Length: 278
Image (cartoon, rainbow, N blue to C red; front, side):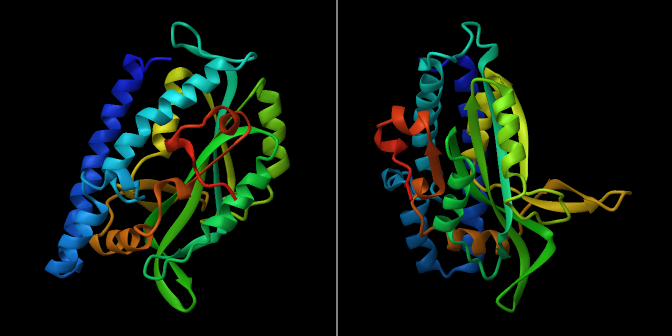
């Protein structure tokens, strides 16, 4: 399946956010590292020259990865006998959902970031066992929420996983939600650590894939509702928090934070789709 105009438009939009990420990340390095360290770090982890290393923090690596990801994913969805995309790029013939997992064990302070990616991926794999899915972990920093990690207090960093799961019907996805919603301990006053959102059209699907591949451009702030529950809005990250996050993530390969199962893993053999299995 060739990349259509919608997909190319979404890729261009993602690249605009990649550029913003690059600018603010470079500025955070300028603020918090000496000149020699800054230049070396920039060349190693943020340069176009080293995009083939596929480091998690390199936006140029993501620009190589995203088009192939979208093309491969849409091809796999379209090749399934019981599913596919409408010729007019409209309503999906397969039931898809964006599933977001949060878990208290994955939270930490921004100045003491600790995250066991292997253990977290295994927990998500166990929850989605027997289904077709592709997913990615990312970190969300909350500017006005504090968290303590091993006696160190800082801004809350909530590692979480976005997964796209597809099945022959929404009833199957609904049963999946009922089965796994109690396995993940929520934070910030949320009732559950699992959230489902239906993806009804090709635009929904492609946008969701690009969304889960995004660079950490913004953080969040929480606000209390009248009923006492919290809502969250996007917020700029401080340069200090951004530097903490960059320092913690630069040691990872891009594919370390991806996982997949079912039809995705059986149908995709390209280099860019060799996300680490556990």
